[in-house]
Every structure is written in C-alpha cells, then in structure tokens.
Image (cartoon, rainbow, N blue to C red; front, top):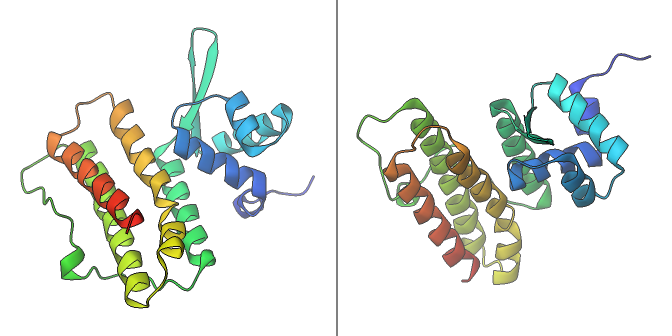
Length: 193
C-alpha cells in the first residue's frame, strides 16, 4: 500500500467537506456528517478515522453516542480551508496589514486568560478579513449580491467561534463574548447592504 500524505486527504472533496461540516456544526456525530456531505457511513467513518490520526478531530463518548469535534489543529485547518475557498472564489486581494478604520471595535486591554485571548485573536482576525474583503469589493463597485456571496462563508467562521465559546469548560471573558456579538451584528449589516 502506498504511503499516504496529508495533502492526499484534503485534496479530495469529501474529506474537505467533512472537516468544514464539523467546523460549522461543532460537536456532532458521524451520521450527521454523512448526510451533510452526501457520502456513505463507511466512507465517512474512514475519513474521520484518518482525521483523528492527523490530530484534526477528537471523539468523545456520552452514553451510547460517539461524538466528533475539531481539535485545535482542526480549527486551524478549517480556517485555512475557508481562506483557500475565499481565495479561489474570486479576485479578492488579501492584505496582511489591517487598515486603521477596520480595527476591531472592542480592544481587550485587561489581562484575560489564555483561552479567552485565543478566541479574541480569532475574532480579531475574522473581523479584519471581513472588513478588508468588504472594503475591497465595495471600493471596486461590486454589486451587493456578489458581496453577499463572497462574505457568506464567514458565517461558518462566526458559528465556529460561537461553538468554541459555548463548549468551553472555562468561563470566557464577557468582553470576548461581546466582541463576537459585535462582529456578528457587523457581518449581518454588511450582508444586507
């Protein structure tokens, strides 16, 4: 049997869709993923097993139900896949620097725990991406339907962060939760422009 490499897994449609589905749904189980990606249960469990080997997902058993959710590495890969999708969908230019007027509204200046800080960092990066893409598209005169299509995948990222906060065993700082609510409201506003 030929040696397998990670790129062989993610350069295929079903594994990528499976990972994105887990990211969007949060803690779920294999039969739901099977239905969402239009696959067989056997193929889905094989994909999930391979993802577990790479450390992208983790399984937990509660009663008679076996759940699957993303690991921290899995969240990073989902973010990378979303960025790839956005890049491939169009002529959006990505800048590493964030314009001053698109800085997140809430700056957390107090000392917060590392999990809250990590989540806030994700929120800040997501906010920056959304604002940059919106501003680029808007400045180039792109129509509102196209803007909504280009921004649409970010709803999945917002849900992933929401799931991170909801499933955290620790209490996440209220400033972080407020920051997520702010980006959610801003995202909805931009979609409806």
